[in-house]
Image 1 (spheres, rainbow, N blue to C red):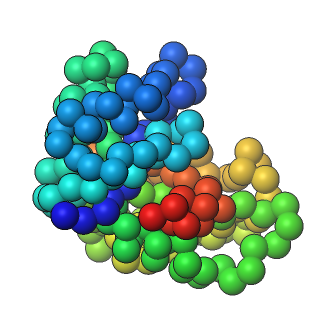
Image 2: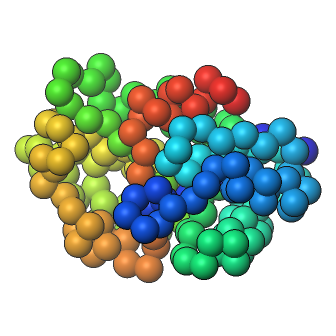
Length: 175
């Protein structure tokens, strides 16, 4: 048994509402233990046996049946989440700047790594570290120069979800 975090993509925005109590109950029904949620943006902590891709498929399937819409699920081990929280590729983040972690569904290919890092510019810095991507916006997040179109071009067929690293740090402390 190992500790994991499931990150649900694009929930509790618009009509894509996922009640965290129901989501927790659903994970318990899969046989997972010590299930908890963290903030209301689709972060589920649990203990289970298995590999992340198997867990992603199981969670996605049952949640999509429950809610009736696509729920791409990204599972990381506790160690991977802790590494995201402590890795500081940009050093100390200046006030008013934003640091996100982007979690791709599948490991990046060499071509995807190059495409993602080539998106860096004066406002946005993008660095691949291990499985995931660190993204520094030298401004508020709404002032990024990188929108969904650029990410889809760099990662065609490889969906992602993003979390503010400050939230990831708080989540890692709960593991």
